[in-house]
Image (cartoon, rainbow, N blue to C red; front, top):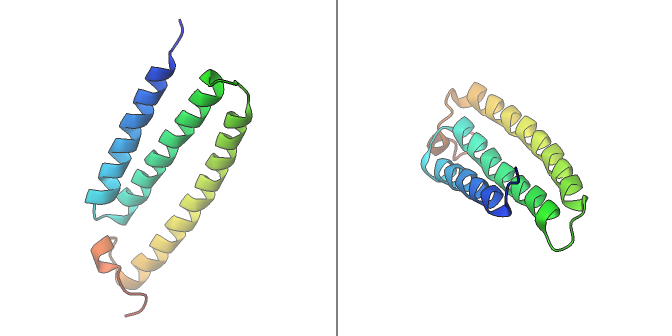
Length: 103
């Protein structure tokens, strides 16, 4: 059974659209952070698909995806640390109330 590149691109498109919708419409900072991660994973799926089915198939896309996943893990750790600090100060995770650096 072979999976065509169209299937990969379709899954990536759906993931990216769901992530974009969540990032633009939700007010919970954790949901926004998770939505951004969905969009990043959609990009990773595209990188792997094009590295396998592209004009010059190579492992460079997969290696770049591993690098991207590493950066994403660091981004999530930093984002959660910032959210925890903001929650301790303001006692909310609503992004509308996080418009000031200091009370």
